[in-house]
Image 1 (cartoon, rainbow over the protein chains, first blue to last red):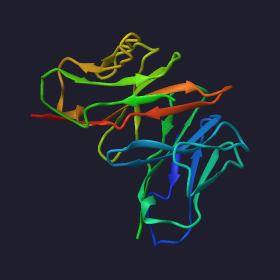
Image 2 (cartoon, each protein chain N blue to C red):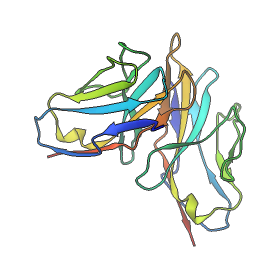
Image 3 (cartoon, each protein chain N blue to C red):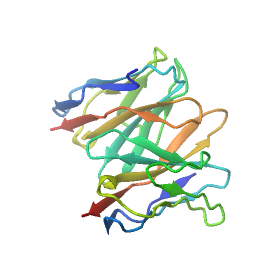
Length: 111
Length: 112
């Protein structure tokens, strides 16, 4: 039982490049979330999903897109990476109001 | 909108000393509150939630609705408690959507 798995773990991009971060959960959770973690800012919600085929904006959605084509997967896309998007990205999943389970994070650097 | 405030960015104590990490929230309804812990370069883990009223790793937290606080306490800190601690609040945002709002975190260092 892997829980929440994020790939890749590390990535370096050049400004303007695009990429997709993958999140997979094997707990059959309805809800999935993408956060970014920055020093002194805590965790901020980027986008979330309350079920397959649905997505919604969080606190800091600009510059990101998401998709939830399958219940177990939640993809985070950067269409044109900017240095301000250098961060550690965490995916999480939960069942209704139960505690969220987090992945190991993806360290993304944009030069 | 809901908000979680952790007034201390850094907290340093000696091993064996009591520790209290403060958390205040603003929300007009009945929130659910959590403490998450993140050890160095690891994933966030749930430490405890107020509805379970458990003691995990010697930590406890009591929800004080009058003071809108959910402070985390441990009577005798250990070096392995050194970590980043996040207080978080979840509420239903229309229908059955549950979003988690995090505080900015407190980095606890327990010195030998």
